[in-house]
Image 1 (spheres, rainbow, N blue to C red):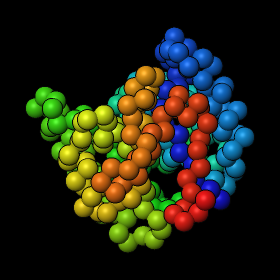
Image 2: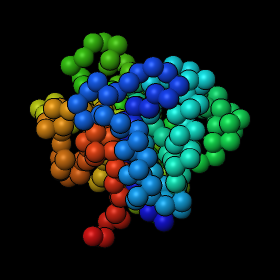
Image 3: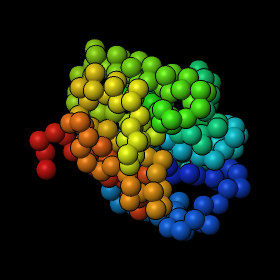
Amino acid sequence: MSLFVIGDPHLSFGCQKPMDIFKGWENHAVRLEENWKDVVGENDTVVLPGDISWAMNFEELLPDFQFLHRLPGKKVILKGNHDYWWSTQNKMDHFLLQNGLDSIEMLHNSCICAEGFRLCGTRGWLFENGQPHDEKVLAREAGRLRLSLDAAKKKEGELLVFLHYPPVFGQEVNRPILEVLLEYQIRRVYYGHIHGSGCSHALNGFYQGIAFRLVSGDFLRFCPIKIEKSGEK
C-alpha cells in the first residue's frame, strides 16, 4: 500500500472547458488515466491538491468524480482556486454518498491517515503583496492549515502537508502559511497551481529546512508520483 500525489487534473467531462488549447495538455485525461493505472494499485492512496474540475456545481462535477472513482485506489481531494463546485463539508459528503463515490474523501480542516502518513493541508492563497481582500483570505487559509495540523496531533504517522498554492515562488514568500509550517516543524510540502513556463521558477528543493515539491499535472506529465517514507529510497 503506497501513497501517491498529483495535482491540477482540470477535468471537464461535465462542462465545456477543453485544456487542449494549452501546450502539453493534449489528451491529458486519457494520459492521466493510462499513467494512473500503470503505477497506482487498488490498495493505494492518491492525493489531489486542488483544481480537480472546471465544474460549477455538483451536476457538472459528477462525470469528473465518476472518472476519478473508476481509477484504482483511494483519492484524497483538496480545494484549488478553480474548484468553484466546492461546498460545505456536509453537502460534499452527501454528494459522495448519494452517488456511491466511496473511494473519494475531502481533506478540509481535517487530517486523514493513509499508508502510514498523516495528510494535512488547505488551498492556500496569494502572496502578501495582494489586495486587502487577499490578506483576509490568506489569514483564513493559514487558520485552516492550523486546524488541519491540530487535527493530526492525536493521530500517528509521518506528517505531510499538501497545498494548492505554492508557499514560496521565485522571490516571493507567503509568510502566513510559511510561519505555520515552521511552527509545526513540517518537513515536506507538496503543492500545485503552477503550469507551463512558470514551472521553471517553481521551488523543488529546500527552503528554511522544508522540502517543497511541485506536483501539478502537466509538470508531472500526468503521472502520479509515489511519496516515499523518510529514510526510504
